[in-house]
Image 1 (cartoon, helix red, strand yellow):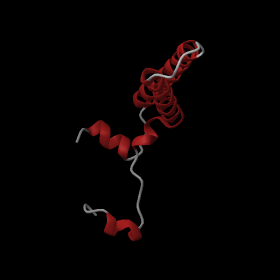
Image 2 (cartoon, one colour):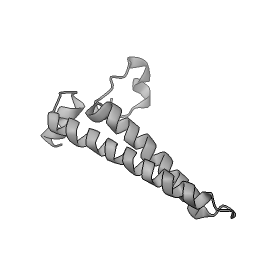
Image 3 (cartoon, one colour):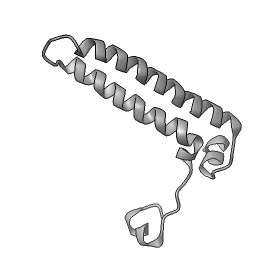
Image 4 (cartoon, helix red, strand yellow):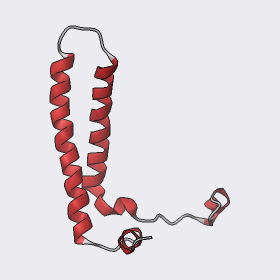
Length: 94
């Protein structure tokens, strides 16, 4: 495993990862906004919904969810979460 990923899993602060992941989150939020404006223009026309319309809406939801997660939490998304002993039987590597 790379030393950078190990650092992030241990929860150590790393400013480069903070900037890159939070910047990616902001870019996803901006793309969500632009995609929402485009989808509003497409869907506002009187027509039956097509699979492409649903795919646009799915893209909005995906970019909004990922953008919020990355911009709010950043590298903390990759940190290991300790599990209690009660959950140990459900994981084979423990």
